Image 1 (cartoon, rainbow, N blue to C red):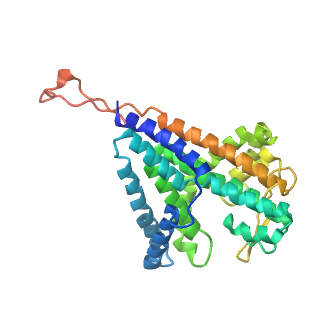
Image 2 (cartoon, one colour):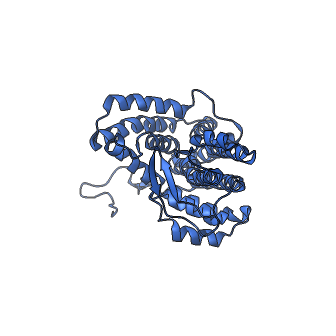
Image 3 (tube, rainbow, N blue to C red):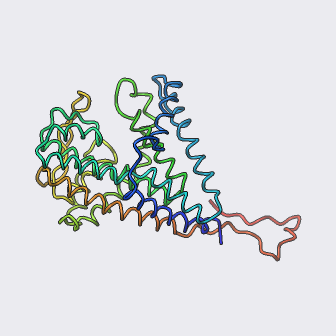
Length: 340
């Protein structure tokens, strides 16, 4: 059995266990591994910051490289049970689907109780919009859109990279995504310094965002939606968003929920006018719980997809001489060559 085959079963089992743990084990209030990484990255930023792309690229490499190296070391664990447990623990640490759903449901609880001020106070836990000017429907739209986009960032993307690359994929993706949240946004300070982190996050999320859209279409009937309509809305509106990835997720959720997302958003006083995505009605309070149900179905499907990816057979090894050639080729013989 090859090394890749020995790693496949523990990796797939660990991903499934970690995704299950995310549903039942809440994140600690202090000392979460992702938060600790963020603190270390902040200290590194203070040391290396200059308003230049070169410094930003160096910062990204210095922050992500050691995390990926740690994952490579973890992949060397030989004991299958220990490998599965390690993968499960790391998966739990980097996946945030349950936290996303809980925060959205708390906002729904507040809105359903008529406490718009409480909903405004909770909204920054999900997104960076200015909540003060939002009414009930504005908060509902912001929450649904955040659930749609973050389902990819918080769940589908780390699981997909974990299925493909194991621990380095899980840890590396979460490091990249965390840096994007820290320095990848548009501001005077990070316009140049955060460029590398933002672009790397775009690359890392390209495939997961599109997988999220496909899984949302498959799960659409669970929220009284239609898979074909979801795919049609995603194809029509997915590229209208300023992000190369988020639009595919939001358009797919809009299609599955038969909603119209997008519009004018305010971020720290900066106003953005975004195209509307979808052809349905505008979100209402009860649509928050529908979005959470859809997201949880996508989360489960992505865990199964990642486990299946981990179990795929590895490519065949390069040609090796048989035992009949164990004494080596003659003085004029050449080892077989393979074309690129």
